[in-house]
Length: 291
Image (cartoon, rainbow, N blue to C red; front, side):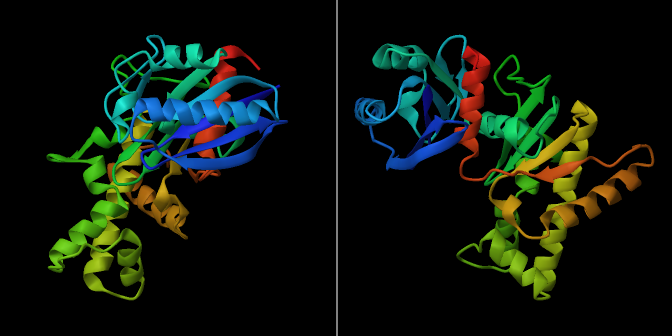
């Protein structure tokens, strides 16, 4: 038996079949403009995979606050037409098979707990760093969504006066601060600012130091709020060479500055990048329906 797996994104929908403990037949299609067009694409994909595999169910990763009990995706995302109606139940009727769905960041976190950098652990935080900061809270091996489905929205945490973790702890906003200080009309990328810092640019070095300080501060706060076994870092910046070493240096400084914290948080880089949401969606299906 196999699973059809889909990861709905703002620009594309990635898909694969989970067969014999691995993803096969991977591909993608451009995210349609309407829900009717989306359903048509998914029906055609399901028919294509049915001809090759015995598909028992479909596992989805999706943006937004997935309310599994109500079958609704709450909140908002870059795919507005999937929100605020019983989308999960409609998909079950459309395909005539079991359907599971979970938020994309939560899926990525589940992938790391199931087969990645936190394999075998029960209590883990997954921190996704992109243009903002999100993630997943995993307790006793399960996602903790919270009363308002805001579990894992770490970016809302205030770190300095009215500045949030997302404001201060992302490479995207680091680059914006640098570009503003330098009077640049077109903001540089985070990678460009990291490169300038390595080349000795004084302002870039200051902004990179600020980035690491607040990233470390946010992670310190998360560690002593949730006390996980490990904190996993994901998102584009996680691929930066030397990120973990530099982060650990700043974590040590933050811990030392408190005079009371007894240990330094254990942090790791995610193992999965492009396939994380698909793999986590499979695990979420297995948690929901059994293997």
